[in-house]
Each structure stands twice: as C-alpha cells, then as structure tokens.
Image 1: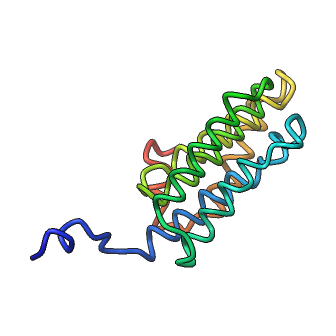
Image 2 (image 1 turned 45 degrees about the horizontal axis):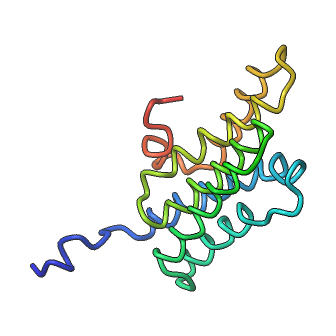
Length: 150
C-alpha cells in the first residue's frame, strides 16, 4: 500500500455527511453572530466554504483558512453568544480537515443558544438546540456527532 493510500479517508461519504451536519448546526445559530456583527461575513463564508468542499469545489487547505478566519471573527466579537456562534462556524469548516471537529461545531452552536437565552430559560434553550441537532444527524452517525452521548 502506498503512503498516500494509507492516509486516504476510507469513507468520504461519511466525512461529507458529518461536514454538512456541522455546517447546518453552525448555520442554525449564525443569526446570533450576525445580529451583533452584521458587517462581518467570515463565519458565513466559512460555512459556505465547507459546503463547497463537500461538492469538490474547495480544497481542505482553503477550508482551514476560512476556519481560521471565522475564529478570528470570534476573537473580534464582544457578545458571548456571537463568539460561540462564530466558533461553531470555524469548527464546522475545520471538518474538511478532520471529521472530529463536527461535535465541536455542535457544542459551540448549543453554547451560543444557551448564552443568547435569558438565564431562567438557558438550559431549556440548549436542550432544544441539542434535540434539533440530534434530529438532523443520521442515527448511524450520532456516536461520532455526540461522542459523549449528549
């Protein structure tokens, strides 16, 4: 077996399915970033880059750059929910590099919802977001998307 074959992703369809799920999770909370940073398109562009990667229109390297840009947007943001939403987009885009970033995108998305909600409803809001995430991920991929079982 050649060196290139040894490190090739054996199941790109699964990798792409996780990438699209991560993109959906991040996009589901993107409004929380754009509400306070309406002129900053870096998280939206990161999500778009990941979708393009799943279609073969982007390289993994360009997705990593877009992910880094989304994380820079998070550092520039002031609102905690916006920061978490930008991190969700950055982690989602990083799935092009490693599928193991997918759960982090979902975690940050749930955190963004929790931070945006009033304290008395934050836990319920986060639970509802987690439920939405579960409903939008294929059952066979849930152990990867939710490695801690949440």
